[in-house]
Image (cartoon, rainbow, N blue to C red; front, top):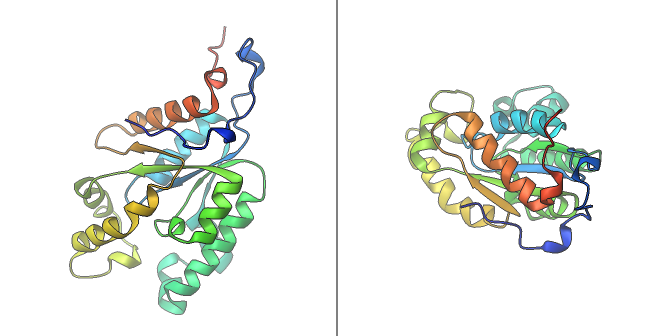
Length: 205
């Protein structure tokens, strides 16, 4: 079951009597967090379309700013410098209009980044088990942290380190095997519960 937000003071004021007057676009950015393979980018794109919001992939923004791929950045400058650049990029994005933002797996581990997200957005953790993650990441190359002999063991270690921190997210849902749209549905539903039933989409006449 999705875990609803702990801080109810973040809920916006809504007019329960006339939900048709309330726009579907949300008043705060939605930041997707989770390990590589959780589906943050794929879910984020579909979710942004449904919410009528702009989608931003933090890794893509970092690559555009650096003029190289994430893998090349790791090789040239190391992980510490990458994390510093990642923090700057995320803070810049969150200072603008609300968006659906997919972050890299390590972004939420930085306290400064978590603070910026808490102040400017609603965080949503896409939680997946080891088999689902490994199956998905095995389809794609270019993941620096998995460039080792046993990527499944690396994923397991990352889960042990990061899941206790991901649990600090405002909301979470399960990212499972099956149709992508089913995960998008779960994300949409938990956000609608969070922001209030009056923000649910009204079917066109």
